[in-house]
Length: 338
Ligand code: NCD
Image 1 (cartoon, rainbow, N blue to C red):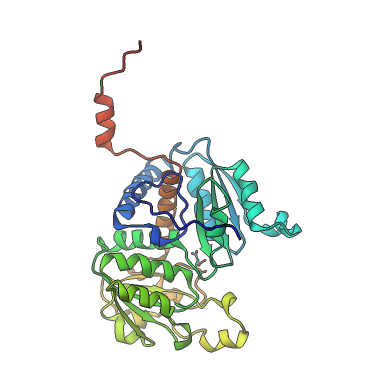
Image 2: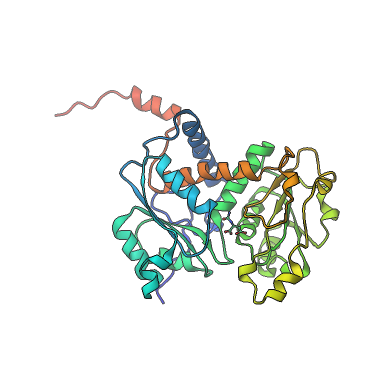
């Protein structure tokens, strides 16, 4: 087993770094990323994007199914003028011949400047990142983490509610196997949030994660009743039961359909609550709720592209420089060549 480097803190310098876990981030890093994501939104709205990553290539390697994460990364890279090597169906790559993850990412390192990886095993992103010298972004490692999703979720919260500090946030569904909620809870913990966990007993938030956040002084409340907490929630974040991570069909049948958000559920919610879901949904939110203006899950997908554009630019050492520093540069006297 190769040595897996500890996740390197971002420390406000994203250049060349792997993005493996939310633990690498501080609020200052998040602020930096969101400023860049705002600039990306503006660039897309005005011109469809920019040429910031012209000449750069992103390899995207997905060992598990994906619609949003994979297509938003591909769109993000291309909207910045970069190229892509999309491997969405690993069964048609040399993985089908038995090539291991280490050799596969080493191969992609030869052709690209950044790798985006989704894999079914916890820790796969860290293992793969240790093999290559270019940035590797974790797009989901089994039931482990999904840091870019958590970042786009927080960006959505900021856009929807206008703030991210001191909110009452309810995470609902499969909290045991859902990697999005594992990363999001870690991220929200930095913002003095009250976290409510609503799930069937079998699908509770991992005790280890709850203990870590508890030691950090985070207010957490576990229940199986949404009614208990919905009225106080600023955000309701719904997730699907992760069928593919269950040992048997019976286990799935027992918990599937435990919670369904309907227009009636929404009558108990605050008038400005944000209803979110990483998607795909498989029945947890009735489509009748889609027209409710508090339903943020479609906007959430769009925000995801801006955040991924920002992240790709920053790890590749590029930035849409803030106006102030550009002016300062322009004001510098030209260097006299000797
Ligand atoms: C999530 C994932 O893959 O973890 N989807 C996503 O990335 N938007 C959630 C899920 O599959 O339930």
